[in-house]
Image 1: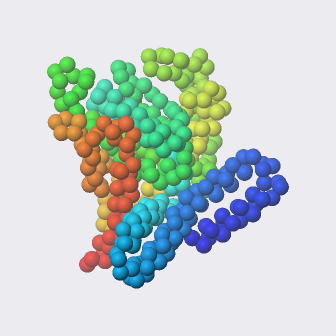
Image 2: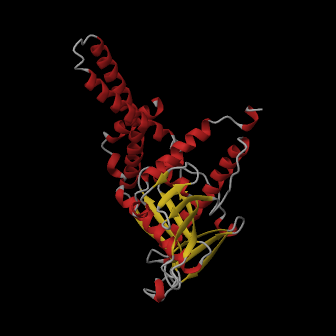
Image 3: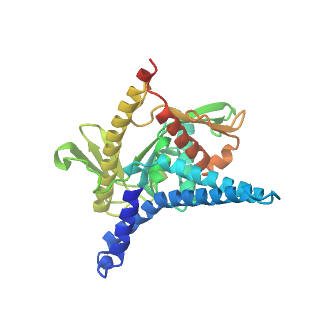
Length: 354
């Protein structure tokens, strides 16, 4: 807290200088840092202030024979509980990468058209969630399926702590419903894999030999059914040969722009691999199973028939209105998962129980 407060003061002092706005891009980066720092320190200050207010009201209530101050005391206690809740949630997003934007990749699993349609439904769910929060959404890459839906797509969601909120979405998402593509009206189970990685900048150290370790393929970008197909090969696909990790971009107009964005995405994916290795080591120490990489274990079930609910496999949270969830109302599920990670972190390691 002291370090963050000192950094805020340092930034404020720099902003008062006459040359601060000379470099617009650098000034924007500093302002982003300031906003993220305040998003951490402000809830802590509010918590301290609410605690002081409650202490004063408690002392006043002890001398108030009429009992009129009890309602005010209860309201103050409720406010303090809300502030504690905010701070508790913030502690789950304390890693440097948690404050970053995020690439969200959705890939249809086995199951043909139903899974392709399900993947597209998930793309819409995350886009709607971002819009609800006022975040910016960019479609980086999309590969339409033949009949309906998509084979895969990647979104770049920009906003404070996007990765912190969404990193737990990585894994398999399962949908159970009456298939709209089955003339017999039978129930189908569809899977789609979600992968979330942080957008990284120069402050994240990732060593990549672009000439030796990365293969570049160029291809023509286009939409479903051949719509808006470019006559030039402007789309770029990069493959990191040592790991097999792939990043592709066809959203920009020029090959140069697509290459630059694909490089950023590949860097982010390789950084995520390093994060996963660290988390796997922690999980092993606690005697847990950890699946590294895209897809992973099933993390959430979406049931539209015969019952209607959405349930997170890890936190156990169950929501009875899947329509709202698929329209982007996933904050409750995201926050429940983050709080579940807190309980997992505080659980004793397996060797500590022996």
